[in-house]
Length: 233
Ligand code: 6PG
Image (cartoon, rainbow, N blue to C red; front, top):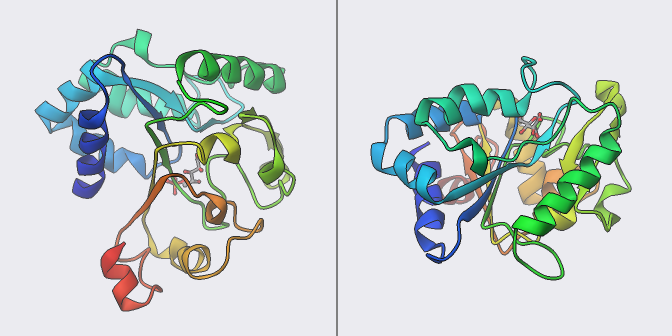
């Protein structure tokens, strides 16, 4: 997680002084290890508090205090421990009954706060990947999403029997930097498929191609990559 923290620091320090650094946090559990590292790195946590404007790559259809909430996880493991200013953190409203309206509202917020034309360009979007190749809440079954002109979508995810709110590939791929954090043996075969084969709608993570896309893998997640690729990952 030192590499992830180092990438984060580099992006924060490169942000022009006149504006905050726009960062979208990923969901899932992997970021918890990074957040623990940040909490113990006083200069980095102060830099985040001083310079970051935080968003989320996706959210489940739950309230912020629900155990499954991506915002709730970030609040408990990062935002509260480092004293992040709440006015600079923008969660998705997973508790709304109409998630399409919630997605529209978040899209308007992103368009207002994040600079960039024709598509707002985040300084950094952090992502994870599921063992099925999903990223954010873009799942293999959401075949139509790669063509979406939307910036924020609310796909129905049949495998989860629920809608989600998610940044679209169009918004993700407009970012200056995308940082994938993927760990664990259970992801190894999908990491190989995503990185060693042509991009495929069957593997949404493989469709992510921002200005700079970095995959940070632990040895277990990189274990099926050719030796030289694993070292460079
Ligand atoms: C979500 C995430 C999702 C996550 C992957 C990996 O809401 O579930 O945004 O894309 O990053 O499922 O999750 P883990 O880090 O828990 O393996």
